[in-house]
Image 1 (tube, one colour):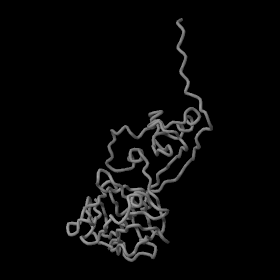
Image 2: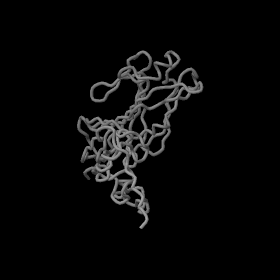
Image 3: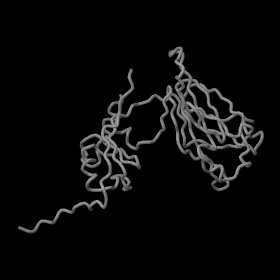
Image 4: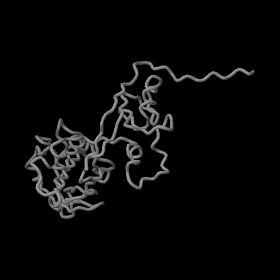
Length: 266
């Protein structure tokens, strides 16, 4: 009987295994207005080309308003105010509900960013961000009177960088302020595929919902800090003692987080 090849063993860990956090209950939060962060641009004001106007694409399921702040910091209850009030008077610009809408600041409401150095524009100074877009959704007529803490807003905080002589917006983070609760948005890569079985008319032929290790159980465990939701909890528990690399991107694993998505109450 010919000798059988030895099974290759995974490399031994050089340190303690990554932490495994079980059953982090995730709740779906309704976001009534969504700014597409990769569409934010600074465009010249035709009436005064030295000034820049903020433009972007957004979706809204109710009417609302957008307020643009320059060099703003966060205050109580997720409110924002400019540290240079003489620079610009923030004004709420109303919008109507609709998908894939194009927003642009009204002419004359922008600022001349030439007064600031590239270093000031390109990095937050403490809690002060060079650009803040506050998009607030108003209650729909069907909802009637709302309680005091009923504000629903998406806030986009960004810096401004110069690339090839052009000023470009780079989003640092986005915040949801929903009925008095502050959420900081972080993308989990793969969470749509893993949960779409609960979505009507989902594509039953999609094979991206299973764990990338066993190819059987649904994905419910995210790798941190790369945020790939790619394994089932049982495979993640076993893998953490064999490897400290993400199966998707091979980045080092600091933590494994099991996520159960709970739909909002009807």
